[in-house]
Length: 506
Ligand SMILES: [Zn+2]
Ligand SMILES: [Zn+2]
Ligand SMILES: [Zn+2]
Ligand SMILES: [Zn+2]
Image 1 (cartoon, helix red, strand yellow):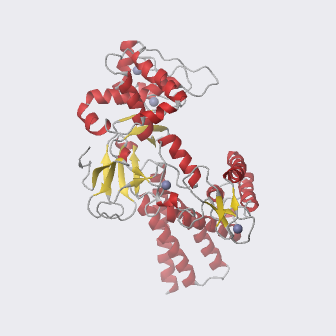
Image 2 (cartoon, protein in one colour):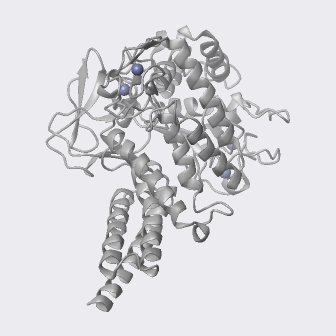
Image 3 (tube, rainbow, N blue to C red):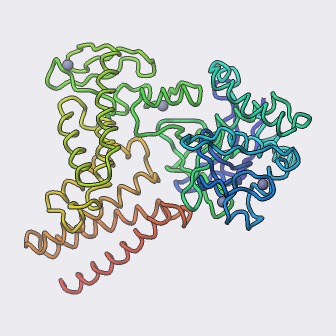
């Protein structure tokens, strides 16, 4: 058993339970926004099943000339000219010594299994360089060996592509046992987090403390990764926390329905979630997975045992029952239509198709259903940005529409990601734009007087303030950091114009 130990900051401690294994709790009462953990990754590297990428900066590369001059593995020109990249510092020497050759992909194939060994190798090299940190922090991490062995194809592929490859062609058999390598592969599969480089390329990072955070479909912590600080991670409280309260993060997409989240967690993380949201057939009264009942007017069909894969569904109004298979068939067919719209090229047609689908399935899905929510997010992004629906072209009705879509998505996010959620911040920003434009056009058309105009603008200012409050901690070069800057500018301008109004009206 592991005794409570202190984490990289003092607002968190590690606990152990037979059910959850190691988990983290808040130490002392903690206010929203407080930093709970701050740590450097144990290792970073390319994603599994990815394309050929530069081993320095993770930029995808198909150029057969972009190879490391020392070992012949993929490395872009820019990274080749600098020593400050993980490839040169870590595996390059091993590849040189063993003369393990990189085989570029035949044209047409997009996945490069040969690169799957890079991050495990970096973890192993970090273990050798820092045996104490390995022993205390990484070795105790969950790796679900027996569950992974069940999935024979994946287990076998990892064994051949990673363990046997490192021990054979890379000549590392005397340093790393097959068992150890497979443990590392499992630790990464279960605990590694996806991040993006400053230029937006995906990669995986292993954080020993943040990685053992327990999961909940209503998380109470938010993590930010800072590419500009060596991919340091900071975990913050999203809401106020009590002393001893377990810390949770969501390992799955919070805006998926319960059945979809459960499947993802079972297949990818090897557990069944029993959080409050998962156990509640209405998903905290949002009816996020509920279907309209075909038998009565007012009722909604909800799963009888939401965490069970093949549960039957019942109407909470009239009690009518629907089989799991029937519900699955409905969801799959609606989902495939939504996927087809998502795949369309950004433009007016995609927007109109999104609106058409929302109307089409109004009589089938609960208004806040996750599929409707997906469509709303797609529409929010397009109103004001695509041809013929650019911001200046939107009529008041369309502006109202965009605002309504934002409010609906926010009403769901307020339940599933309360507090300092990045998704909430994005939607607050999106909502402020139509509100400002509507206020101005209402004033010009004399539908609003000066006082009303000012009140509406102050509402928009409040949205922007909250947006900035959430995003201010993000890395300046990340997408969210950039949005924060934009929101701050909008906030300054809007505040100035309200002050100007003040003197005119007084
Ligand atoms: Zn590079
Ligand atoms: Zn090299
Ligand atoms: Zn859950
Ligand atoms: Zn009914």
